[in-house]
Image 1 (tube, one colour):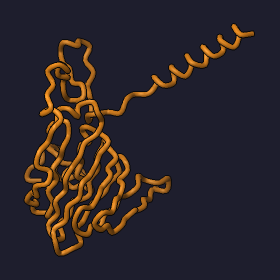
Image 2 (image 1 turned 90 degrees about the vertical axis):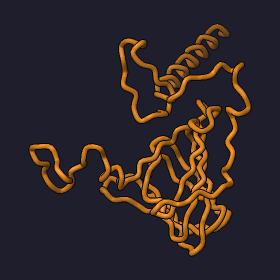
Image 3 (image 1 turned 180 degrees about the vertical axis):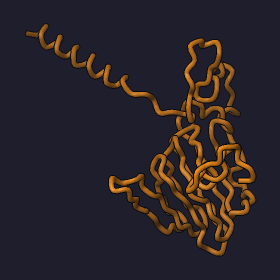
Length: 212
């Protein structure tokens, strides 16, 4: 009977292992085109790994996140701290950002294709929100909130979201993201600023677009 129980246990363990390995890991880049010859290309996490014996404390260090950055024409400046800025974050699946807002500055609707974001307001008053993916009936729902200093809000993975400083004084927020390379897709830029124009509402001309 003991042998029978052991056999059943081993079968269950094998089944559990096969299920655990059946899904792909979370992607850390937009796409990875497969090649038959591994000598043709190699792109893993966007970085190679340094020999651990050659790592230094500087690989895990970033200085100056306390320094305000000049906002752009929309009144916002995002300072990212990812594996690009801190090589020690490579493979760890986390990153950080400081967001500086001018009075009435806007971080326009965008998504992070590879991360959930947790936002903490350090200064100012922000109106923030995110929109769900399409419902079965084609609709969407807005989740929004006015945040004050010390308040926290979560933007789920991949959903369109925004932050708007509704105060007449500068604002600062710190965001944590669960990816070393969260990426950002600004909706306006993606639709209207693509290298090849995205045609909406009219048929494209037979030839190459001119002045569109």
